[in-house]
Length: 249
Image (cartoon, one colour):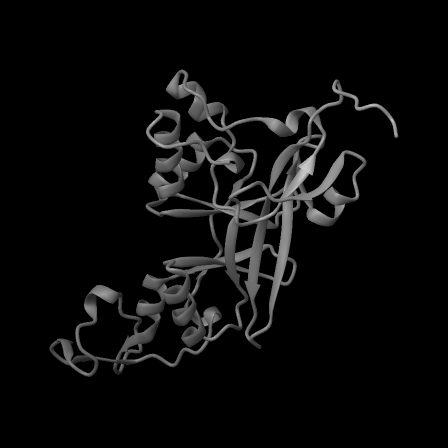
């Protein structure tokens, strides 16, 4: 048995991201990726584990999920540290603060299934992706409500705030009735604003503020979704930098 090499680099733990995609036939698929410290971009978990620097999968004490063990020297970085706020906002990439376990939907998923999913997962929106995991839109609870009702006669879509009771007049001669919609494709907002995983937290926050939205799909170099950055994620990151919350593992 060889002597222990105390000078060998200790393996760092890299978070495994998961994009859980639900299709209309009820089937689900998982796309697992990691942020490779050597390539400085997202790679499939399978490619990570095949790397010479990989130490396999590891689960630290008290953790509920596995991490990828990596011997690359850049893999053991910590969370955000205190410093000049503007510099941190401009220099810290989105991938370090984003939500990494994301539920996504295919366009053919039924609205009934979406409602149940939002309730079960306690979420208010999800990206809509194609078969390769690239974003084609986004669907939210507001979209679900807005797509359910149209004005009788004109078939004009009614915003949620204008629908009070099904079948009642919202104004003289205009009644609300159920819209003929069945799937995510009928209700989603087509096209969506995304942000690269290498973009700064400041840029993501600016996009959400200007667009008046609360979430942005985060995409890798190949355009596939690898996470979501929300207004709550940004707030949490600020609290961590300020020392009010512990840094994310």
